Image (cartoon, rainbow, N blue to C red):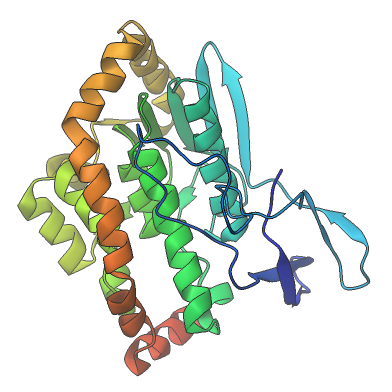
Length: 318
């Protein structure tokens, strides 16, 4: 597995693992939109995941090789690629996003078979960004993480084949945006979804806003982005965030039936129909993501936002 070069920030004594920060200049984003050719080699020597060389194992503070923890489990069953977020609460850090983006890209290269995105944690899909790692990060570090996040979400949004998100637990902020990137969203009763970015002091990233505008009615997108409230499954259904609500124990069966329906259709026709519907939005979202960076970063580093982040991290016990 290709990974970013990193530098150790510190050791979490309670969890027993290191925190990492990517070294500068390691993350290229805003790749060509689906359907446009990718260059065979990059002039900066980076692969499309932002890695240079084989970094399948990082090193501890003594220089010993230490195998990286897998954050996303990937498997294939019956022609369906299963992507399972599998790192505890699934807080989004560089490792999780890189693995997820890589897995989606590899599935695309195989022709775009159906993708099923789910969580190994029955109570949490994903709560969004790892604020502890980002709390003390500099502007360029946050910029690179923002790029990685939007590139990952938009990679899933622009995937040519069918995509389903099985949301069995809470999906908040970045976790909610990731779920909304899937073509179809099935939610378990009891899970909550919502975009809480405004409560933290930042807007929803610009490329993701473009995606929301194509996914939801204008009034629904406005409510989610500007109010920052969590939604019950019933409210999420009313807003068009999800397509179906099922009991938690019935989630796997419901998603399986949806997959069977999708697989009965022509994969070639599905990909072309999806392109006709969304190609202009895919391209616009990538442009917006690049254009919106500075405004997002200005909000992130505003003193009020920094205070909100610090208080939230302290309250959550990060």
